[in-house]
Image (cartoon, rainbow, N blue to C red; front, side):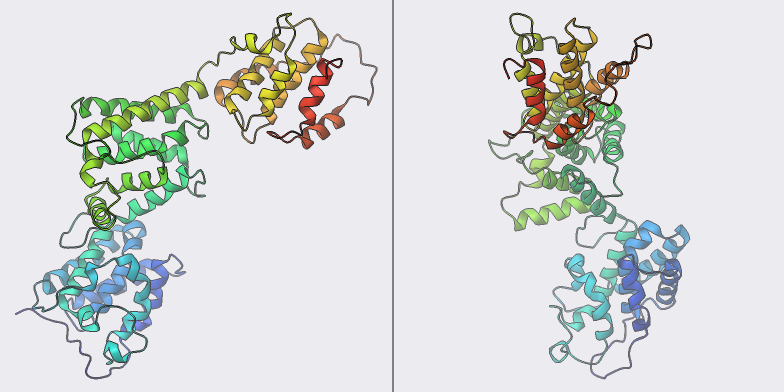
Length: 478
């Protein structure tokens, strides 16, 4: 005979014992609990394992649901083991109990309900039916909440949160660790990484996982994630070439297994990617786990505009976006870390008589906001021409000022491909120790240059620094 919790709504009761602990459970849920969390978890689990089908099993089970994410992430292994033992015991004792309900609360979205547990738990056995309880706001009845099968269902939900994939019979749910990954990844592709997130480390981890198993279950999710992140990785935000190398290696490793076969999907039936990289990254994370894929299937049923799961898993689609990401990463890697060729700029930045086209040169640096690579190349070209030692001292001076300007005109340092040469050239500029002391005293124009640089407005008509350099080089023309 199956034991059932003896919970009734007919007679008012004293406050259940759980009210003394529910605030602690809520604090652990939101990581605001200032005490010994493992002690609270153990106390709750031991009460449940002592009577897994008793009158208060609902309270201790829901308490462990509230703390499950913390248990899976932070609790000691022995503490998590006690919690899992209690939850499994409750599930075994109650999951086959007689029940006339068509649905139960555990089948709904836990994220929509879990914040209300702190208020609802004490109300479940206060003797008031939900229609007479002014504080009860949940759509389900208290009887549904207290149903043994609902308690068993919530026990399985908690088990799955603590040990993802270890139990069935629950609604699909994105694992807690993957929910954090999705949040972190969105912050990266939005270009506002969370304080605790290292984008280089995060993207390298996804790439290494794909290199390690390019044919595994996680293949589709990892390819989608790397495609979503390739624009950020190749933007110059990441200064470590090894990150791009690993991402390239991962995509090169996965392509042979995807093959060159065509698929049965028609035009427009593959997912649209590249426009909303944060949404794409979120889908990629969902593809990493059975629970996440189940959640995505539900999304697709609710949102008809989303592509079906099978389209995301299509090898032809994955091969196409892998190639696109690979091409973008290779190009970006060369731009950021390869040898930057500027010889072709001679034609653009020198006049037929061999003199500088100073207005074109300063214009390129000034409009960095429109074409960052053109500004970098112009500054590097100026530095290399300066290093070659042109005989005209006025040209040498202007070239040096343009090279320095190109370094300081942006909010971020130039990519390594440019920084490497600029560092060598500008770092080699020294005062000749054999030269006599200069006669200018305090008359060097440091303050004037600083003022001009501080007043510059790139991309707009006002450009005192560029105008100053134009005049300095060719006062008769500017």
